Image (cartoon, rainbow, N blue to C red):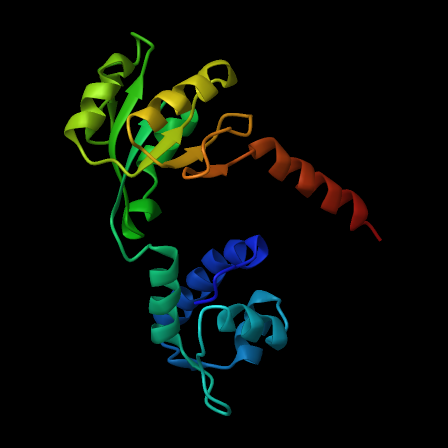
Length: 209
C-alpha cells in the first residue's frame, strides 16, 4: 500500500465497502471498474485510481472479485476487527448511536454509555445502564476501549476529550459542534450535523431549473 493516501480517497472507501456489500447480497460475484463506477456515479478511471492506491486488483476483461475486493477494503479500513466504543453523553445523539443496529454488524460495539446528569444515570439504553461519568477513568483502566463517542455540549467536549486521551483512548468520534484539538497520534472524526443540512440547502437552491 502506498505511503500517502489522500483524504478524498479515504473518505470514499466506506462507499466502496457499502456498495460491494450490497453487490454481494444481490449475488453479484464479479464487477468491472465501469460497472462499479456507474453504480456509484464515479468514472471507471476514478475507481481504478482509487483501488490501485492499495495494490493491484482486478484483471483486464475480468474485473474485480466482489467478495475479495470487499474483504480487502474492509481490512484496509480495519472494520474486519472488533472495536469497543464508549459513549459520553446519553442525550438524543448518544442514545441513537447506542441503539444503531448497523454499528455492531460492522465491528463497532458499544460497551458503555456515560453521563453526568443525575436524571440519566441508571437509565437503560438497550442492554446498558447509563453510568456516572465520574466512573469513567476507572472504567477505562479496567476495560479495553478503542473509541470514545462524544455526544456532549460544546462547553465540555474539548476538556473531556483531553481527559479521555490521557486515559489512553486514541479514537474519537465527535458530535459536539467544534473541531477537537488533540495530539497527532489521536484519530479524530468531527461530525457537524448542521453542515450536512447547509450543504443540502445549497444543493436544493442551486438545482432549481
